[in-house]
Every structure is written in C-alpha cells, then in structure tokens.
Image 1: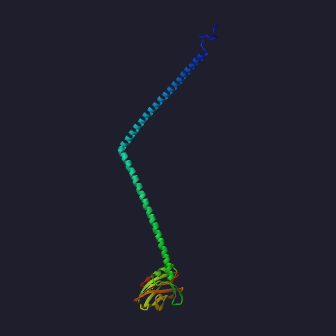
Image 2: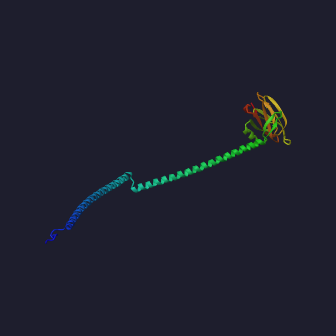
Length: 271
C-alpha cells in the first residue's frame, strides 16, 4: 500500500516560502537601485552647488579686487589714501554733529528770547492797564469850576500830572506856560504878560493880548479858570495858573479842538 504523500514532491508551504523570499529579494534589489539613483542624483546636485559656490566665490574675489583697485585709483587721483578718506569722513561727521549742536543751541536761545519778549509784552500790558486805571482815578479826583465869565469850565488841572491826564483825554488842546513878571510871551494864538504876583495870597494879575485887544485879568486866584473869547469865531479860551512863586507863575491855556493852531512866533509875540 502506497502513502498518500510523496516525500520527493515539495510541499506547498515550501514553495510559498521560496516565492516570498524571491519577492523580497527582488523588492530589495529594486529599492537599493532606487536609493542608489537618488544618492547619485543628490551627489550630482551637491557637486553642482559646490561648483556654483566656487564660481560665486571667485566672482566675489574678483569684485573685491576691482573695488580695491578702484579705491586705490580714486585715492591716487585725489592724492589721498584710504586712511585720509576715513579721516576726512570722520571730520565731516564731526562738523555735522557740531553744526546740529549749534543749531539746537540757537533754537533754545531763540525760544528763550521769545519767552522773554512774551513776558515783557505781558509786563507792558500790565503797566498799560495800571496807567489807564491811574488816569481814570486822577480824572475822577479832578474838579470842575465855574470860570470868571460865569461859564461852566471843564476839568481843571491843578498840577502837571493832572494836565497830562487832560491832554490824554483830548477834549481840548492844552498849551503849558511859565511867565516871568513884566515879560510878554506868546502862548497858543495869544500873548500873555504877567503884571503882578502875590505869592503869599496865591493871587496874580495878567494881561491877555488877542485880536488887537487887551484883556485885563486882575487878582485872580490859583487854580481859578480865567476865561476870554478869541478869534473870528469868538471861541472860549481858558487860562489856569496852578503854581505861583516869586515873580513867576506856571499854568496852561486850554483851547477848543477847532481853534486855530499857534502861529509862528517872533521875539516872544505872535506874528
């Protein structure tokens, strides 16, 4: 009786094992071939890159050499060395920095001057306001009196400061005078002559020359409005003496704003 399995025939398992080994070997060969190809390609790319780098390095060296030659040539043409070029560049930089510092200092100085001017302007404005306030106060302290012709006078100045206030107000024109006893003197558009002075009683006598007329004003008191008419328009002039001393008086003549201006004076009298 013969067995069902022939030991000389390879088993199916062995055949499959051999087939698997064959496939693995073939796959290994294919992978090795592919890896070798990739490695060769990478080596070729690396070699190409190295060649390009070498070319770039050579080109860079050539460029640097050209730059050195150009720099040396420029230096020779200018008659200076690179060290001198650097020194001149540093000197130019220092001068620019110094100029910038000077400009900043000038700007600070200008700003300080502007601030000072602003402060001065503020001080002037303050002084102006104080002056206006003082003028208003002085005006309020002045008095009005009736003149010797019975006409109500305006504000009377009893001293130089009050006269300045009246001139500032500008309602009339004011002509200050100082008269010596016996001397004829032109004031405004008239002439005045001091006749008598009584310093003890603060009185005086005076003659007014106007329109070919002589107007006598006797025993007038200090700060008294002495009134008279003058000119073809018959304008009211006003004379005030606010200071009396020995043989001398000081005061002013007030004329309307539309009164004629003083004529030329010759030898102390109007022409």
